[in-house]
Amino acid sequence: MNEGMKIIEETMRKVFPDILPLSLFLLALLFLLLFRPRKRREGRLLAIYTLLAVVLFLCPPFAKMIRPFMRHGEVYWRYLWIVPVTAVVAAASAEVTFSVKKVAGRALAGVLLAAAIVLTGTSIYNRDIFKEAPNREKLAPEAVEIVNAIDQNAEKTGNSYKKVVVPNPWIDEVRQIDGTIRHPFVGRLWFPVPEDPDTQFDDFKRIVNGYERDHDGILMSFLDRAKINYIAAKHDYGFDATLKEGGYAPIYENDSFTIYYNPVIEPDE
Image 1 (spheres, rainbow, N blue to C red):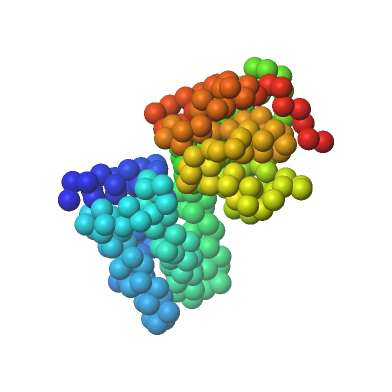
Image 2 (cartoon, helix red, strand yellow):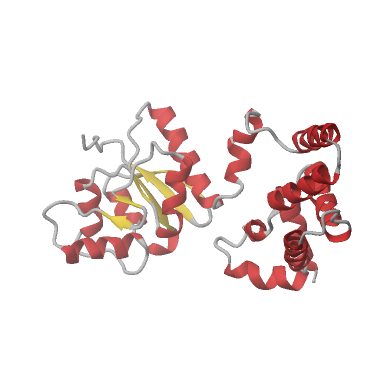
């Protein structure tokens, strides 16, 4: 129970750091459930579905049960994607506006509701919404660490060429954070080095993802031919010594992985 409550509290702080947007949503939901001046069936169904989804979200045993199945573990907030916050606020606003009989009254109600939405929300033109920190909270922390280390090293060395091999769990998110970082693949589709047998390339993929140990010099051969100057290596994958012998130097290390950089690698353009 305590673990589930902690997950819910952390999620609420991330999604609703300000009480005003949450208050507007709850008031709109309450209005649809209790009042509904126009008595529309759709509004009641929307409100009931939303109420059930919110109750389930706030259930500690459910939070504890579902979190391990969500990618990276700490993204329980994504459950709220199924809660139609915008639709509830819009439906309640429409109910309030069209319940006023006079046209002037409707116009005034619409203006007041629009002002309430603007004041309790965050403008898309507010620069704070684009700050890196809030966006990166929703990504794997390992991917953020990898990007930060590579960017800092690039600035320090003056070398803007950044081509990296990253283990599968963080492939997509590294590119999502920094589009200037290149991969020898797009998403999970790898592009082999020309003239390499498929069997050797498959071995390389298994090695960098920890499914088998390096053998026959495959790791260094592919890193060199694909012009990869950064590689994130998990400690238990067993090829740290090979990278160091091949001219790669560690630039960042934590309990899980080490990021290596080879200054001799030239761009493949």
